[in-house]
Image 1 (tube, rainbow, N blue to C red):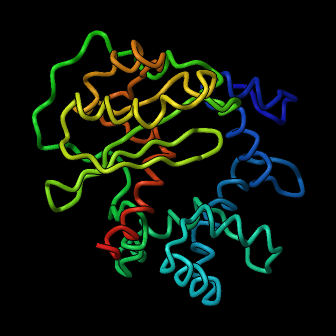
Image 2: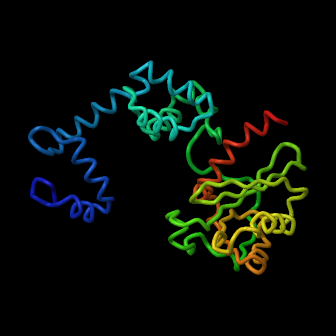
Length: 265
């Protein structure tokens, strides 16, 4: 087995262990002692860090600050970024906030209710409804242009439909991936023809270079996606089933918009 003590690089070790090179580099950096990286010492350092608990549990001031900002509708990413931007004495990563929220202590406090999705647990939750038949003419998201993934140009959109308690309350939301520009329109019905026509009305006045692709989930309201291509040249791509994180921007935005709309209604 290759090791750093034998002079092997993190990349060579990662390849042999089939792990990310960044994972190996982080392990070597965080758990290194004054004598270098020693497995037994590294194990004790890791356990000591685990027993200390999260930074939120160790600092009541930071805990109160994070709770207050979550209560104002801030996301963990916004809280972490603001603390870094203002050069505050308190620093915490977004992932550390999420880990505390979904820990036993966080669930007991009910902090998950401050999040946009209000989920008590992380990960996929199986849907009770029956699987829809696959549509062979749908282009999968991994065929989407690389520039759309990287947000390097202004012409790639995401689309979704928000449903509320009243069945006639249907909101079409569109977001441009690079600029985060939002377009919204209330729909009278949630059928594929109405949805396609509404998207065309929203985007047809834009320059052709500003509307190249759009990404949807697998809802039946987007079944008329070919009409978008035929009329305004907008190519549609679709996420994998049960993978809303592949359209994270619009999912997060929808979650932040919902409480504001609920207050107005």
